[in-house]
Image 1 (spheres, rainbow, N blue to C red):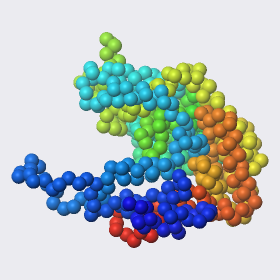
Image 2 (image 1 turned 90 degrees about the vertical axis):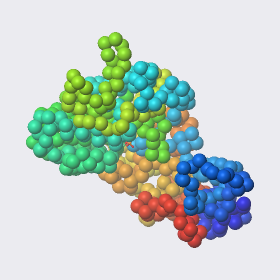
Image 3 (image 1 turned 30 degrees about the vertical axis):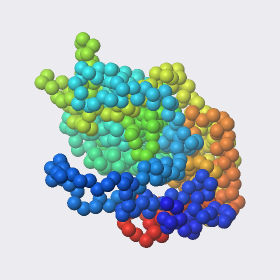
Image 4 (image 1 turned 180 degrees about the horizontal axis):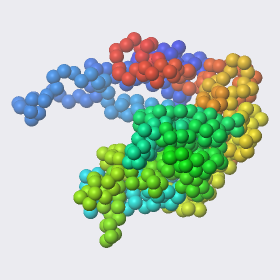
Length: 522
Ligand SMILES: *Cc1c(COP(=O)(O)O)cnc(C)c1O
């Protein structure tokens, strides 16, 4: 097999400088066709002779039609997937500046601990007596999360931040119904919020209303207080917020929301910036999810696996979902799976997941927490904030930093597209960064800033790594300010240039059709 036989043509490649190569590869930048283009349904990767079996034991389940998969040998298959994997960016390859998403190094120690057979091989239907150690991990992590947040209880089962939001909002709904106030249907969400906040509130059956941001990038407290009333169920607020700023008024907001009969949901995705320094419970928060895959370093990417435990106030804890771990008088750990005969936990709203949650993530998160200790976690948040401020102050002369005058930022630095040359946008800066060998920062979010660029370095980057990134972003930003036409067609050194991202998201082509190759390559 040679690659050009598979239908690759030089003009299908991203471009780049220099003459096209015969294979379409450019050194280690490999041009990899689809597996259906390499293999054929007419060939096979194995060459066993046709069997001469008198009677099979398949009970009449013998396949009647061809399966339609390309036949490839083992080395061909391994190479295909290995080559594809090299086209991915990863936290183990370089700095991942995605704002809002806290992409930090995943310590190898945690991986090792999670792979211990006693954790890796447990089955959710195993007798509870045989998984006491695993339950102890869940319980110990739960205690850490409660202590770090100053809250009363925690629901461990939600499997991502957004799932945790849903869990918290369902607790709020159950609490309101129990009080006979199910008519409270409005949830107030600041306009800088992550899209999952309004989506969750709507999914849980609430009506969402926006609260504007003030000129300094924080929520407009007066507008929020003004809107409170007997129809408001809750406020969903992110702290530190998605502009990278601490919501200084949160305690005042919580007091006002409580006085008006509502609950406070805090989006805790940015908890990394305040761990060990601020306890959300002290700020009057009733429910907050913690993204273990962000703050506590468990792997994050490709859609999972995440884990989003929700810490709850005393008012909401009775409504937490099942199951949960409980320590009995004799020290034995039990899994409360259903409302038992004693009818303890009678108000739990139900269940979020079939089983207990993400064991592998719990193990990694606890290993991370224990290896840092309480003082180490505090150091983490301080270093994360320091790194973000270093990025902000290093680049504010090159890129417009709309809230730089509001004081130091927290975990992430926010820039806008003001000052780029006519016709140049945030997208061009992001694409230019790809040529520099970086995954782009978060772009066009939060919505309150025009052409937003949100950079979150995290504490795991050294000063040298930050300097290199800052140098790269500054160089690209200067090209965008100067109107360098070449930047409009970046990236030049990636396997593909600019895809139609909207079409790719809205109408992904997921199934192989024997389409003309030019079309298939799009
Ligand atoms: C990541 C994030 C979420 C959603 O968390 P997932 O784990 O991706 O579901 C919600 N809010 C903010 C601010 C986030 O950054």
